[in-house]
Length: 73
Image 1 (cartoon, rainbow, N blue to C red):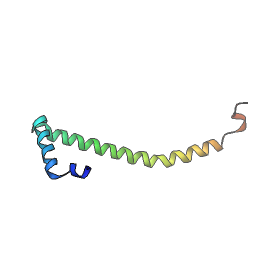
Image 2 (cartoon, helix red, strand yellow):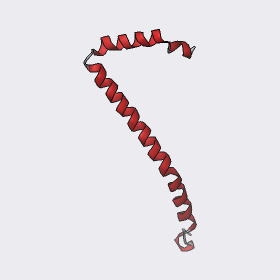
Image 3 (tube, rainbow, N blue to C red):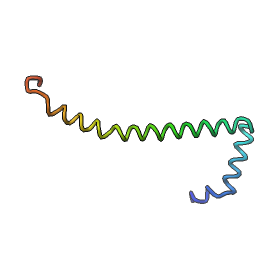
Image 4 (cartoon, rainbow, N blue to C red):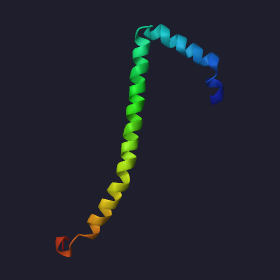
């Protein structure tokens, strides 16, 4: 069912409707903004996945180095 949605005829109709709604001057600006947003999202996902292993290592070492005098009684 979903594969029928992305046929070239349907995509052409969606493009024409978007052209009528936003106009020929605004459509390239919207596409550029959408591209920048997707690129920024992908970059932030990469940065988060690179930082995640480092955080898990530092949290485990800090918990094992706690002194018994620091613990509440």
